[in-house]
Structure formats: structure tokens, C-alpha cells
Length: 140
Image (cartoon, rainbow, N blue to C red; front, side, top):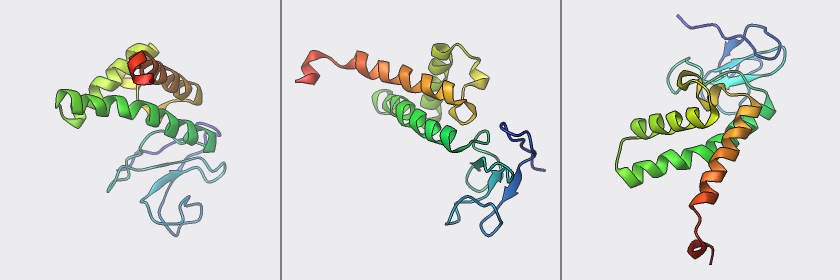
């Protein structure tokens, strides 16, 4: 049984939509989405499931989630290359580190569920790591 999603903006129940359904946000079929038809917020699903990738998001929040992932993902991916660990272990360690930096519970630390402000913080935190790691030798 699928868990009903509620829109964070208008508190209306979201509908599970597939390509061809009115309100489906993609031109091509990328799989089902949970969509708030009244306000247009939506979130995709994990591949092959109807499990949402996070909370429903409007265009601004989706843009900030993309930016947050662009800043955060290279950090945990570098751990895989550096330490030779698995993807899941590296992501878990990355989200643990991020929860400490953000000062929020690990169970609530996932970009898919963050607000615009939290995503902005993720971008800042991850950018500061990149700045700190630069040495004068790498800037020449």
C-alpha cells in the first residue's frame, strides 16, 4: 500500500501520476511522480517503485535541491575513491557529517526533504570544504 503524500505548500493530498495523466510533470516517461495538482509541486519516485525521492517541491526548491546535491555529492563520492568504501557507506558517512554541520538529527538529514534555506546551507557548508582544501600550490 502506498503512503499518501501531502503538499507542503497547500496541504492538499498529492496524487500518484504516470505519463499520460493530466498534471504529469515530464514530457518523457521518467516514472511515477507524486504531484499536487492544485499547486503543481511534485517529487519523483525511486526507480521501479512508488516511493517518493523526498518531499513535494515547487520549482524554486527543486532548483536548490539540485544545487545542494551538486555541492554535496562530490564530497561523499570522493570518499569512495579515497577510502575504497562502498557507495552506501560513503553516503551514510556524508549525511552523518552533514547532520553534524547543520545541527539537525541524522534521521532528518536528507536533501530530498530539506527546505530552500537548508539547501542553501548545504551549498555553503560544502563550498567551505572546497575552499579549505585549496592550497596555494593548487591555485597556481
